[in-house]
Length: 233
Image (cartoon, rainbow, N blue to C red):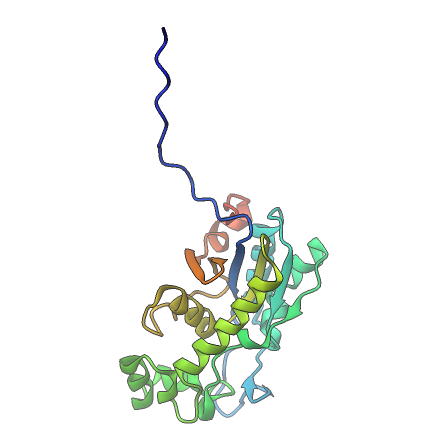
């Protein structure tokens, strides 16, 4: 008599629940440089620089990376650098990006229009305080980290409600993506505020449970031209 086979409890790759939403958080490509005395135009009070020439190259590498990945929807913010980053892919796969305002960049108050870059480079005391306290609100007139985290949470919850069981690209900004991942993990507000331009972070949302599967994946920016980059599925 042959004994019954033992149950197999080996390790297996992670599989999200069937009604979970996979969100690929894509930071926009490199934007134009700030030149002192020549502030960026503002949209709803926020700097709106276009992509630099290098940023457009990064957008093409993003399209190469994701062109074979099934995508159900694309979201961008009202700031042009997010649409410019995803446009090559959106055109290739025939998806019209929708705007999600609550994923826009942190509002930098008196340092908007590109001035934040100068203040950061000069290590202004308010910039140092911001890093010490983990609060964007240390910048004069800026949105606080709590305000930022509250609104990006609203955005992710809306996307999840609209796309259960689907994969979505959300093109956003360094500060906003950092706030999403801080919300997901319970980390300090600036713990993830260093994603590279055109990098991909991966979030699985299932009800109240948020799982970070990937952060700052920029493999496509070095391997994408050779077609060797692995799709983030």
